[in-house]
Length: 314
Image (cartoon, rainbow, N blue to C red; front, side, top):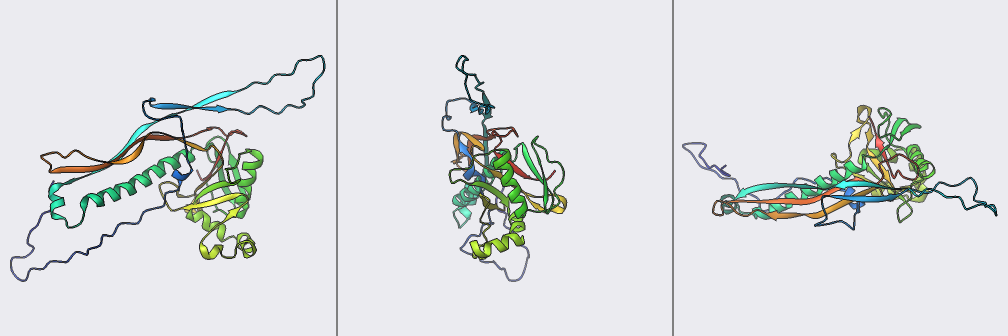
């Protein structure tokens, strides 16, 4: 297919041509956040097949008493080991171009294609990782300003009708720590990745504003949500990763997680590749390509095993 077709738009009169600026302007890129929070499988790579089994060890139940009798054997407990499978697949996209287009274009066409492909790769992998986080069995539906419903079967109880506020942050923090017993990350915090709309709901809450008058007066000025109830908030505007959901799109979707949430099995780190020129060098192209996949480490809603709470709506 021809890259350029030049023709006159008038048969007589003065011919004009519009100058091109010497600067290229690229479309804005949404923020990628999920890739920073996946856990690579260190023992997996090339020449090791298409799947990796992650070994999980369930905790021992706490006995009613550990007291022993002199003439009795020490009681025995079951040591439960389970696995979960992550199967990798190829990922990638490409952009073709011609030597004819390169010869006629004043800017570096190949570098421009590479940049746009890197941007696409970043967002695509972020969405793929987000999908693994949102596969969590524990869901939280916001039923009011001061009420919400947890489910542990992978399905929301219904449509959310309110946005985030401090009350809901407190409910999630308590449920994760006290009910699910989710271990915190290395910095003793949980992490919440939330669509911007959700964080706006928190910052408009009078409880948040009153609290930050004394703890961090500059938070509003800096656009920061801060750390609430041992939850550290990360915002995103990546629509394919986290959306605006609920009745009237009232809720900014989010996930809150602790240790061992999502693993990444990677055979080949995504990279840019140039196509072998065809048709005597006239046909060219560049692609990004990799072999990997993501998976939730514990696909249950059980206490001591579930590591993620997905905040959203049916």
